[in-house]
Image (cartoon, rainbow, N blue to C red; front, side, top):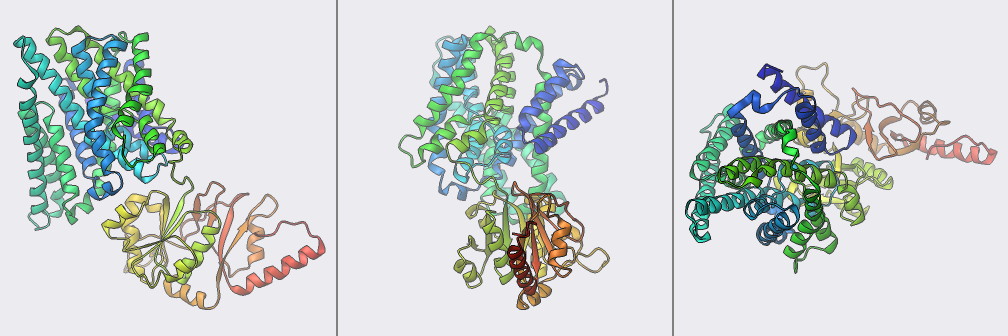
Length: 618
C-alpha cells in the first residue's frame, strides 16, 4: 500500500474487525489483533508502519499509550480499594521488586542474555498493562475483588515498569560514560523526576476539576481540552526525564477520578471509545512492524525462558507479595496465573533495544523479538484459560446473564420472582427502604440506594447484569435511568415501561429512553391497573411439539408476551420494534389475566385425566 490514508484505513479496519470477531466468538481480542497485524505486516507485506510513518511512528505510539493509561487511571476510584487495597499496594511495591529480580535472573541464566540487558528487561517485565488486562476482564467472568486487583495492578505497574527500565538504562549509560559510577548517582535524580512528574499530573487534574464545574470551558470543548492537556503533560514530563510522562498521565487520571468532577461523566462514553480505537490501532501497528529478522534470535533458551516466566516468575512474585494478606488462597493462585503483557512492554523494549545497541550491548537486538514472544505467549496462555482457571479456583462470577430492575413495585417483584425461580440472577434497586420491604419478604436480592448515584457503581457489582428494566412509577425517571446505563449495558439491552414515541414528535425521543416493554407498550398506569385486576406472570416451555403458536392459542388474545428466556440464560424481549424468533427449548414469560391461569389449570387437569400426551406449558 503506497498511500498513508490507505494504511490508516487498513489499520482501523483490522483492529476494529478483530474486536468484532472477538465479540462474536468469545476469543481474546488481543490475540486476534496481534494475528491480524502480523498477517498484514511480515506475512503478507500489505504495509510497513515504519516505512509509512517514519519518524512519526514512535511519538504516535507513545502518545497513544499515554492516552490509554490516562483513560485507565480515570476509571480507578479509591472506593474500589476497600476490599483489595492492601493487595494492590503489595503488588505495586513488593511485587515490583521481586518480579524485577526474578525476571532479571531468569533472563541471564535461562535466556542467556548479558546482565545489563537482562536487568533492564526484568524491569520492563513487571508491567501487565490495561491494554491487555481490561479487554481480558471484559470478555471473562471473574469475581469483583480479583478483577479489581488485576485492573489496579495493570494501571499502576505500567509506569512503574517504564521507570524501572529508565533507571536500569540510565545506570548503564552512566557506567559507560564514567566507569565505576554508583547506583546512588543515578537513582535519586530519576526518583526526583518521577515525583515532579506526578505533581505536574496532579496539578493538571486539579486545574481541570477547577475549570470544568465553573463553566470556564464550554461543553463542546471539554473533551478536546482534556485530551490536549493529557498530551501536553505527557510531552512536558518526558522532556524532564524519558518515560516520566507515563507517571504523570497515570497520576492525572487517578486524581481526576477521585475529585468528583460531575461534568466528566458526560465524556465517559467518548473516552472509552477513544481507548478502544487506540488499543486496536497500536496493537496492529506494533505487530505489523515486526520483521522476520526480529524473530531470528528466538531459540530453545528463549522458549525455556517463557516457560519459567509463566510458571515460576509470576506465581512466585504474587505469592511472595501476598504472604500474610487477607486475600483467600484461591484468589492468590488465580492472580498468580493471570499476567498478560501488552503495548508498554513492546514499545519500551523496542525503544531501549536501539539505545542499548548504541551503548555497545549487542543483546539489545533480541529484546524486540523476545518482547513479542512474551506478549504472544502470555496473551494466548492467559486469554484462552482465564475462564477455565477462574472456574477451577471458584473465582468465576455468574456466567448466566442477569436482570437488573430499577424500582420496587408489585409488578417488578412479581417479575423478579418469576426470573429468580428460573435461576436468572436478579437485583432490585430502589432508594426507598419502605418500597423494598416486599422484596425483602420474598427473599429477593435487592440493593438499597439511588441507582443513578455514582457510589452505586462501587458498592454494587453490575457486571453480572446484561439487561436493565426500569419500571418505577415515574416514566420520565425510567427514561433517565435507561439513558444513563445505555452506554454501559448497551442501548439494545435497556428497557422501560411506557409506549414508544415513533409517531409523536412532542414525546421524548427513543434516543433518550429505553425500549418499550411489550409489543403494545404498556405504560405505568396500565400496568398498575392490570396488577389490581389480578394479572400475573407465567412461564411456558416451548418444545418441538408445543410451538409458540400453540402457546398463543392456549394463553388467549389478552396475554402479553414479555420475553423469551433461552437455554443459555440470554433474554430476548418483545417490544414495539422487536419480535424475537422463538425456538424449541425457550421459555416464554407472559403477563396474563388471572382467569387465564385458572382456565389453563382446569384444562391441564382434564388432559391429565384423559391421558393426553401433548406437552403442557410449565
